[in-house]
Amino acid sequence: MTALTRMRLAGFLRGGRVISPAIAVLVVLGIIYGGGASPASVAYGYSAAALFPVLAWQTKLLLDTEPDVQRRLARVAVRARREALAGVVAAAVLALLVCTLAMLAPWLFHGIDTTKAVLPGMLLGALAHLLAIPPAVALGALSSRAVTRSVRNGVAILVVSAVLVIVLGLQNSFAPWLVPPVMATARVLNDVTPPSATTLTLLVTWAALWCAATFATYAWLRRTRS
Image (tube, rainbow, N blue to C red; front, side, top):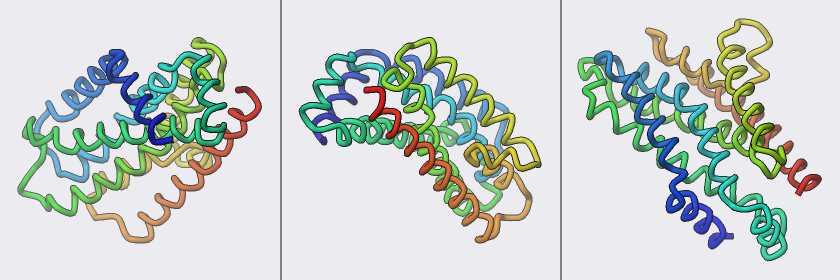
């Protein structure tokens, strides 16, 4: 499985598909941090929210890099569960790398207000990015060609789902529980008072349950459609 994960990362990077999401990441970070300095927690909270659709799109591109025949051969070679897991792991590793760079980027743009508490804000920002990675990978996996069987269907699922995550995440009803807490985390980190341990635990639990349900759906679809 490790070899398959490395192969998919190498194919994505060497095949040039990484260029489009890389440009999108640079544009997003430039817009966020180009307006001046802000507290670390606020900056990183909205950075994680803005990167969410980019990470989901990046995951879809990575999983779609491999031809269908080659993917089926990999399922025979390492078995279905390991083949699907290798793709998810490769996408998660790449997303983690992007988020690490996103944590460093504001220091190049002078986007962090150093007069406020920096270290606590950075820790909360790291948590925000970690909470964005699994849902983004799950959404990208659900919109991959292995599940949707066509690029058109995959793009439609990705775009509609990303919009719903943002729109429903801004609501104050039961609807936000249908999407991952990406926008909820950004709002919490935007508050003047630091979030409590209870609030952070709720966000982590929320994200974990949503991801568990989404990855279970992805695994079921891969078994029935591949």
